[in-house]
Each structure stands twice: as C-alpha cells, then as structure tokens.
Image 1 (cartoon, rainbow, N blue to C red):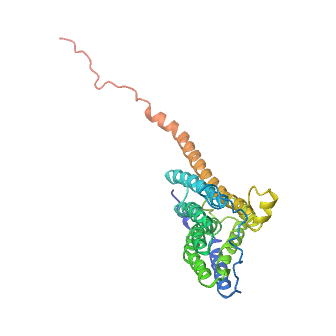
Image 2: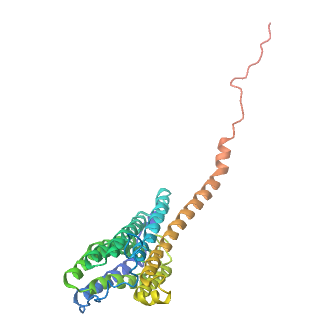
Image 3: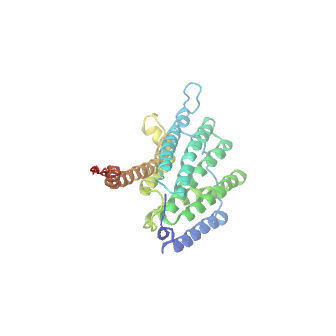
Length: 299
C-alpha cells in the first residue's frame, strides 16, 4: 500500500490525541497500583453447569470455547487475503493478526481451565486473553489516534497484562486485572466516540457492536446460575458468555472482508480505466512498404 507524502504527515489531531491517550493509560496504571485491594470471589470456580459428556468434564463450558477457534481461523484466512492484496496497512494487519491469534490461544487455554477449574488453570486462561486484548486495543487506537499509538498501546498491554495476572496469582488482588479488562473496554468506548483520525488509517471496525457483544458476555457471566435455571438447565450463562464474547470478533472479521472488497473494487476501476489505453496500444500500426520501387524504362 502506497501513501503520498501528504498522507504520511501527522494530522492536526494526532499529537494531542496521543498525549491524551498516554495520560489516560498512566492514570489506569496508577489506579491499578494504588487502588483498593479487590479479592476474587471465593465461589469464582463454582460454575452452574457441572455436567460431563462422556470423558469431557464440564462439557458445555469446555466445548463452548470452539467459537473462539472458529472466528480465529476465519479471521486469519480473511486477513491473509487482505495482506496479499495490500488492502490493509502493516500496523493494522499486525494488530488484527495478534487479536485473531489471541482468539485461537484463548480457545485452547480456556478449554484447559474449564476442564478442571482452579486458580492454576485460570492463570493460563487470563494470559491467553491478554493477546486478544492487546490486538483489539491496538486496533482501536490506530483508528482513533494513530498507527504508532496503536502499536505502542498493544506493546504496553502485552508487557503489563501478564504482570496483572501474576499480581493476582501472588497476592489475590484482582484489581490490576480488572483495570486492564474493564478499563480497556472503557478505553475502546472512548476511542470509538472520537471522530476517526485524519487521514483515517486502519480497519473500519464497528466498535459499538464489539462493545455491545462484550457487555452481553459480561452480563451472561454474572448471570451464570440464573440463566441455567431459566433455561431449565439446558445451558448456563457462562457457556453463553463464551459464545457472545467470541462474536465480538465478528466486526473485526467484517472490517477485514470489507477492506478486501474495496481493494478489489479499486483494482477493477483501475483496470477499466486502463483498458482503452491498452486497446489503443494493441492496435497494429498501418503497414508501410519498406521501399518504394519504380520500374526503369530501357533506352
């Protein structure tokens, strides 16, 4: 993908937005460090659906992670097409790849945790989620601030995310992880409310849909037992939470496919514009005799 010199100049809104994003991120870190101790509920691992299917314990909570893998595979396939066509910039492609790969990792580690729920498995579950968070937050910052802001934010989440998990594992304080998870989504909400940075880089993701699906997932998680009872013990809130959270990838995959479609349309327009010139160039030139000869009369 090529850019003119004008497009590479920082737009008027970029630097103030970068400073504000840095300020918000520092405030979040400060609150995570100096905020009150937040213990994890003692009943955290007490999920509503304890049923086993054959050799699979807690089967619905284990198997409901499959949509994460499905969206990850579908998204990476679409992203590979977009990269081949140069339909997305390098920063957005890398961050989208991180998010989608994070979904695949999340599918595996979450299924591992739910096979036998305990704090040890939960550490790996949350570590896997960090990858997806980093990619998603980076994409939001690319669209709302700048490419370098998106890359920097994703790198910060990749660095600090595992620290928040280890803090909880060592001390029982869930606050740093909560700041990353809930504060991160609030940050996405704030970035989505901004007009796109000019010139608007990145993928055109419908962030309102991402946030709505994530909020639905959190509500289902909190209503785990209530949903299980309301559905006549057919499905639990936590199992549905996995499905709803996985569908938060839908707007990202749609944005990648839209970038592919637009790239192909631009290519088609360029080909149609060039067709008359190609046709003219392919027409044979009028034939000329190499040498005009005239018969000589004999004296």
